Length: 137
Image 1 (cartoon, rainbow, N blue to C red):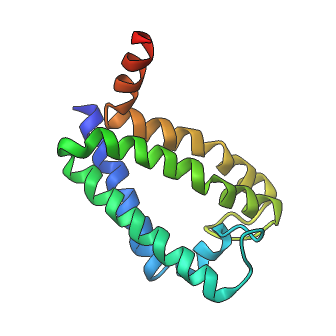
Image 2 (cartoon, rainbow, N blue to C red):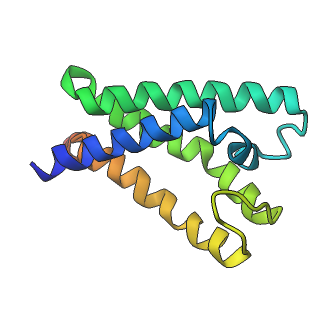
């Protein structure tokens, strides 16, 4: 039951973040686009928009659960790994966003990314499946 609740909570968080990408948090999410990818406002708009749509899809899939639950957990964990450079960029460039207005706060945030990865895998039972497959090899 705890896994289900935490999966739905993570899904709600992803929905909130995804909707935020497209609306009221759009400017904040520019801080997540690594400057080594682009500094173009138009390119950032596309990246923020696409990542918002992806997060909305993840949110819906997490909340619904179902047959795609394990694949969703794995895909979300990969997504969290892929967006981690944006968090590093925010720290390295000392970019204020999401209330992270000091290097200390931005550094602490970096340590939450592994928590999100484990949360995505554990709450969807993907971690158990991956560990079981690893034991068979």
